Length: 256
Image (cartoon, rainbow, N blue to C red; front, side):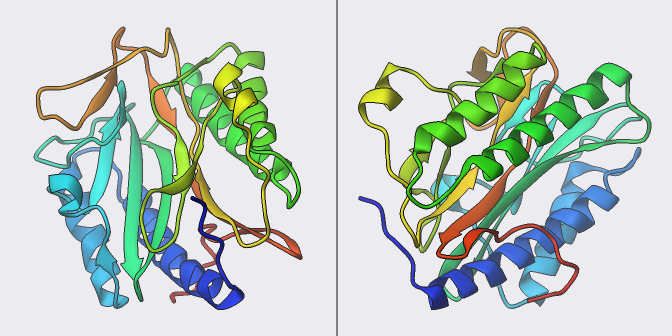
């Protein structure tokens, strides 16, 4: 069941989202050659806790870290550790916060130093697919319009969509209804959702070079492409309001 949010609840979700956005911005700025993913995790957690929030991912179903750090062919749920970033890597960083009992959730894929034109094109297209999805969201619209927007951008540029993972509702729980897929299929057509005022969702396209098929590594968390293809992941949490779409996790440079 979808849980619609009041204006006050959306304001708290914005505060949680801005804390997540600040931690994400810091991690991206510090994703440089020689830095370990564990160091990024520690720095992001320090920011989150300094703002009076807690890391929403840490301990969630046993996840051991504060952020997800997924490098190159790792799509999502990468566990930070001693791995040192290298020139030319790309790293998808996903940050979740809990603040006043509400969740902020956002992600972005960053270039480590100078990356290839092929990698940059993938990052640019994935971000463009997210922005297209945000533009397609509206009160009274359909969930399928968001999914179609992501799919059209990805396919127009020849990238595969990761179909095993999707966006989701956001609120007091990290994963609420509805699921927010990045493509349209018969199941979505049969069970499409009308977007209502007060709905808060995380849209998170994942695109890759290759087939888009996935597998989970032995750690039980890290999801990779089966063919080793490069992957990118971008995410914003948005609220549907009477005034239009409100992007809660677009970093405004002001701490909550």
